[in-house]
Length: 162
Image 1 (tube, rainbow, N blue to C red):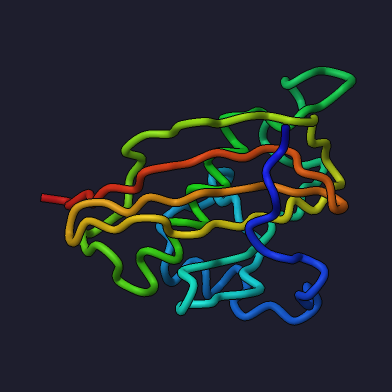
Image 2 (cartoon, rainbow, N blue to C red):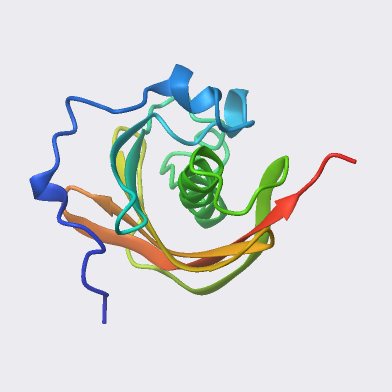
């Protein structure tokens, strides 16, 4: 059975992003085909909640090979998009420090329905636990047209360059 939405998407205005791609690039290090966020549309620091989206096009790096003639967004890329959303929040608001936020683990991930090019993948993440200077735990969900497509929990951990 699918979870309840972390946030009411109908209450949000997707036409007025808080942060576009250039502002996301100021916080997140991913570039080129690994950029999996198009915009951030809502941040609620009092609830440790963030909402953004990825507008999927026919030019996504995975379209040609996954699956030829019937392209499906790979689950690992869905998880990467959710991780980038959580990473943006953790870095922008300095939840745990470090030069980067890396994957520390994922739990309870469920893929509910396939996601295709041309979709707007709405992403939401909510911090559920912080261990200062070490890790942040998030619940995350991905939605398309009001339908839950995937969900799970992730751990973000500090990663330092040196």
